[in-house]
Image (cartoon, rainbow, N blue to C red; front, side, top):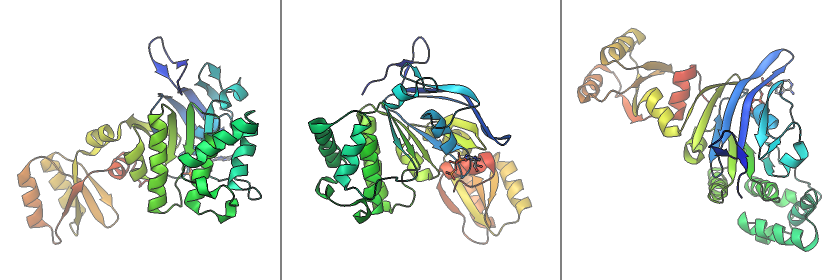
Length: 312
Ligand SMILES: Nc1ncnc2c1ncn2[C@@H]1O[C@H](COP(=O)(O)OP(=O)(O)OP(=O)(O)O)[C@@H](O)[C@H]1O
């Protein structure tokens, strides 16, 4: 699985989005989004409900037409050459849309026909993919006999039938239990190892942190910030944070000011960025009625700091 697109003279990319805009009834839901996705990279669109993630992904695979901007995959502009571009994509939407009247095996082999993969070639590809996603012994099951996690793995297998260069995963693990999520994550990491570019939307920070090489943080259709999970965390909230309960805001504000750090209300507590100075931590323990909780920062903290709202 190799890429053929070039965003500039020097840089090879799997997919590029240029200045995407979309409004519904004059309400902007995607506002000037630009990015590139490299082969063998997992790029995450992380944002709360309604941030515009699905609309962006739909523009990427050509089911929603942007008001402005365009998407390039390989040498094809998607809006102009949708069919050629889609032949190189795999799409996992939020809905399973598997055919319940067909078996697992039939869901794959019939889908292969869309890509003119038929007969022995379709059977061989279906067999390979069922093995890849661990469903080789469920080929004769009907879709409704599968668990939620198995259905998601089957949808992923179906999306890979055409050996795509780029795979779109739109909130792929919503509703799955922790084990099923881990199984799915392993498969996504395997795609990356095979050189596939993966565009993943999620509002789960653990998923973003575990899987994504780079992230675009989205709010109200705009990219607020971008970078690797570690970069975003370090530059926005530092490495450690303290959760403090039962201290009035003016005191917290004063503490933060003295230490040259940030604070943010969080439910019935406050988050305070922990400076390197060890004396500050000791001082905090003496002034709070309940022991402060010290922990490593995460993407949820980044989001809270940047937007004032939680992710999920
Ligand atoms: N076809 C449509 N017509 C009108 N409004 C739409 C349409 N599709 C999406 N929207 C609106 O655009 C905004 C962004 O929706 P979108 O589904 O892209 O967000 P999202 O980040 O994927 O949310 P979620 O995490 O809930 O899936 C929302 O306010 C939504 O109501």
